[in-house]
Image (cartoon, rainbow, N blue to C red; front, side, top):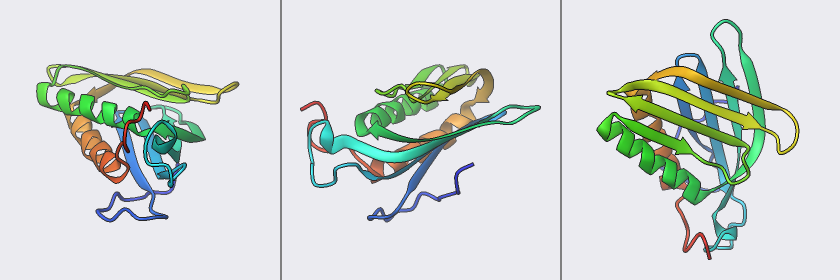
Length: 162
């Protein structure tokens, strides 16, 4: 697993911020270190983030994947917003989409209980996928708090599509 990093209120250069999706038998950790191009403050180039993702999944065995990734700020913001809605309504879906398809997760709840499915994969080659892992609203609230800290530390800069 990746080294544990606690989200903190001060986000400067060299500070890694971590957000975790946990469920019964699954843990997907996304660590973000920095903007890929810190001098660019708008457009797609200004919104790429550099980090790592790790996945541990299994109940009777542990399967692990670790990968360096770049993700877009608006992907994280969109997921955080969907988690917020899911936390409030306790029914629905929140999906972490990744433009380069190296990681993803979907949480589906009905009346506060449901499942999570997801994956970590190389561009070409190996992949680790999971599905139908039980999850409930308490895990969603925990993920929301952590992804909110991540989005606060690395907000969308300017127009991300420009």
